[in-house]
Image 1 (spheres, helix red, strand yellow):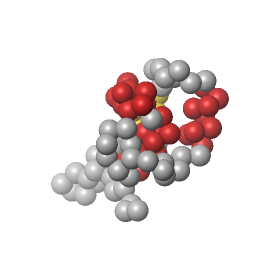
Image 2: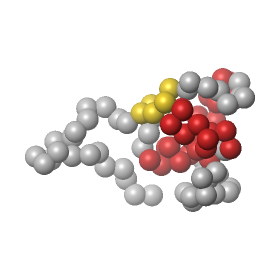
Image 3: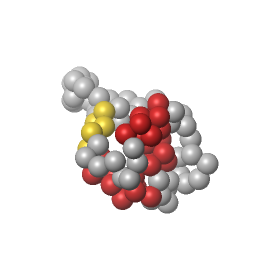
Length: 83
């Protein structure tokens, strides 16, 4: 897998001092359809900070386990894209 590189300004300094993050609503349709696959997709994008505004019918402990063990899903992501 290619390494995720930070966005750089014209003078080659990072535009952001922290890693990118999201709120779960951004991917709410994908989370509803495929929580593990969507978590894996976000990991590949370099998203390390997540704020969950909804648990999508899961218990917090289940989501924590899935975050800890994000591995490549056996199927394409819910959005139809592949990993």
